[in-house]
Amino acid sequence: MAAREYADEIAKINITLQSIEQVLNLPKLIELAADLEAQASVPNLWDDPEKAQVVTSKLSRAQSTINKIQGIRTRLDDLPVMIELADAEADKAAAYKDIDSELDNLTKTINDLEVQTLLSGEYDDRDALMTIRSEAGGVEAADWAEMLMRMYLRFCERHSYKTDVLETSYAEEAGIKSTTFRISAPYAYGRLSVEQGTHRLVRISPFDSQSRRHTSFAGVEVVPVVEQSDHIEIDEKDLRVDVYRSSGPGGQGVNTTDSAVRITHLPSGIVVSCQNERSQIQNKATAMAVLQSKLLERRRQEERAKMDALKGDNSGSWGNQMRSYVLAPYQMVKDLRTDFEVGNPSAVLDGDLDGFIEAGIKWRKSRD
Image (cartoon, rainbow, N blue to C red):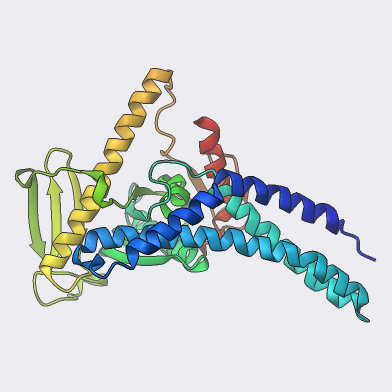
């Protein structure tokens, strides 16, 4: 009756799940979650908000991973029962259609979890800060930067990742000069760090009266969110703090007070801004957290560069010009590092990035 080899597919998923349980050390993870749960239940935990945030964040991530593994195990154990019940149904075709759907969903879920086991970097399990900037291409580039912003926010929405836009600088004619937003989810940094680099768009420009083809560029930067234990020392003398009035599209004022904050770290030249909080003090605190994250990432890259030099790795940064999106004269999105490509740019720009991210994670792991 059934064209699929259900027993073989179930056995294959079971082997993969057992491998994941070993790699993630499920018993140790359950023990860690119990310890974190005990810490989180201490009555005075929130007397130290930063420590409380670290504990609750780690607990949420551990519980999320445990629930995924145990959920897959339960669904996998239920499949033979579903098949047995389907054989007893009068309408076997409809019953097996449900089994096919569950098996397909389970295969996708286990593949996603398998990719997570490749995220073993020091900061991979953390939240991420993503910054998008328009580069070469004028108004085209500003519009392209805003398209990328929407693409990543849609990706996060598809996966139920929490996002918090910290700052957006709008361009005069259209689009944005830059934006920074936080992505809160288990392994957000590990997954999205492979999106870092220059993204190139080729299309017929809607801003060109002669409908000519234009090429524009936007840069994506992804850094891990700092935690209390990271020890990023910042000397106040190395900072220049500017306050200004928040603004929206077209320069329209959002606040009537100078509550937005821009911080320049003079030694490195790193500039961060925040305008989404209600007060100048809150905006400064958020901007300082973003600055610490960027300095942490700079330190990590410097350490990685030293290791690459020792290994004789002269390939340079893989992040530059990493993907092309072609909308005319043909339709294609291609990753220049992994050679992964699709012929449906509309879906990609609507947040369908899983194939690119999975290929990027596997490619990065192969270079370690």
